[in-house]
Length: 298
Image: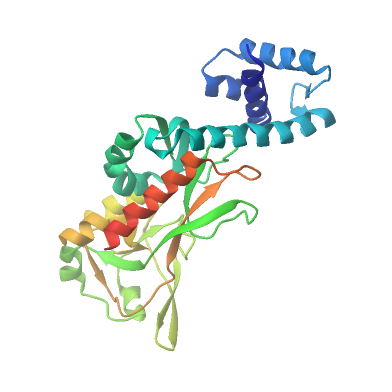
């Protein structure tokens, strides 16, 4: 195994804290990873990692080498892409984390055009409504909504969406259309429990007035896909971002009510692992998503 490959494996081991995770990333056996690290330590003449049954920790020399080596590898990748020029397209692996429903509605349908421009790119979408550990999972770019819990992460805001009170025309025909926040207390609500904006308690604004309403929902759901299914099945109204129902809002399958009362908006951010330069691949994919949402809003 050449030295550059061994260095890249070492960087992945430190990033993930695991020989097995690095082995999965490079699609090799764990013994091959151990051998690469051993060869690198022999070449450098220093111990890079301290291994125990519970943890894998870089030595002082290992930490110093990791920091410099990682910068060098990232800068080399950037230099290669710059030398080839944008006409050659992107190449290599790109792992992107996103929420299941958002990706299905707003990213996957547009992927053919992105892949057509970059036929040598190996793209993996890691779909999960939870905020997974970017380093542990080897994620290059995460698309996250709402307030970012870790202020140390490198992030850039891509877009913003309104939250709305949404239900089917059939539901509102039976139950009546709420005109103001207090009217919501007489309605059935499907509560999305992962929404950072409020979940059960919402603050509505209209000009200088601000009203807080605590929704009472018999059905609480942890995934947007479930909220969508429940609302479309006429189980009640929901307070969600318009991104969650974009096709249905356009077709009229669901409608937004009380639009003169404003709810807290929600941001979509491109988030990169702490301590890493954002790769050209990650930045271009983030820009692609940003353009997709801008096209939808136009």
